[in-house]
Amino acid sequence: MHQGRTTLSKFLIQQLKGSPEQNDLAALLVDIAACIKAISAMTSKGMLGDVLGSLDTTNVQGETQKKLDVLSNVAFINTFSMGGLVAGLASEEVDDPQEIDPRDGSGRFLAIFDPLDGSSNIDVNVSVGSIFSILRAPEGRTPTLDDYLRPGSVQLAAGYAIYGPATMMVITVGKGTHGFTLDREVGNFILTHPHIEIPADTSEFAINASNERFWEPPVQRYVTECKAGKNDVRGRDFNMRWIASMVAEVHRILMRGGVFMYPRDMKDPSKAGRLRLMYEANPMTMVVEQAGGLGSTGRSRILDISPEEIHQRVPVILGSRNEVERIERYHRDYDSGADQRYTSPLFQERSLFAN
Ligand code: AFP
Image 1: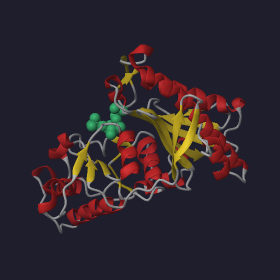
Image 2 (image 1 turned 90 degrees about the horizontal axis):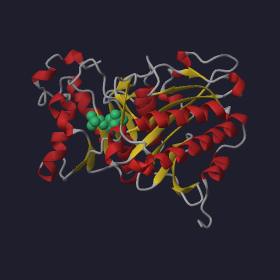
Image 3 (image 1 turned 180 degrees about the vertical axis):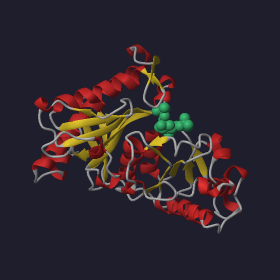
């Protein structure tokens, strides 16, 4: 038994008391925790649960769907549809936002989520996760698309589940970032990581280095300096990680610091980045910034972006504050022309990216 350790429900009652909206937000997070337990049970079965492998369907992103993508999406949609706390939802796996039948209760919130992040890892038994973002729903009327397209700074809550060796749920309601570990024997999330703080400095970076030739010069400059190590401008050696599950990278950064980068690149100039603003960048940035880190596109704060579409992609640079600020400085140096050392032929057309 966890003598004196707080459960998620008790923690939320303490953090969210005093208004009907706060009470409902606590109840919604408890519902999300139940959904995460169900997904955790599915992922932990692996091949024994007939939940692995791909379907012959693609999602709105044009990505082949894994069985667990669909099963996790259904789990979240059922949770929000039956909980009576949500007026509408938007999912990575669904083309357009969906209204929840008001007969199931007048929901105060909008739920935006990536039901299974990192799903290309599920068949090789590498950690995957779920990411969620909670916004306030409009009062007295049906939600419209504009009600979803709000800057990340107005999120009421955000968090993720990581289905790793342990299943954990990490959340913020704007009062710090806190981690809970699932005790499978009793089915409770136990507060194991209160008030998580990301070290401001780090010697660990995460990026998919196979894209290096496509990066913008400021990112090439930063990674080149990290690789050059202690005999160069950084004066210390760096380590690199790449798990290809954003949830796992962000969780590592919350636990020991680091910087995660999925920058804009020339591989597909029509894409502003790979990661999606509404259900990856925004919720993860709220979690990271509530833990003392920073989330940036390299040129602007992620939480200040005014969304234009629900599946909008953005460049993502997030983690230890001093490293993210350095990478932003390198972007300013490049955009102002102060630093031409890393200009590559791919980026001769400065205006291409300098917006
Ligand atoms: P999947 O959900 O399709 O596996 O994508 C995961 C992800 O969105 C994010 O979690 C990873 O950080 C990133 O993509 C990995 O991208 P690469 O496969 O290009 O490294």
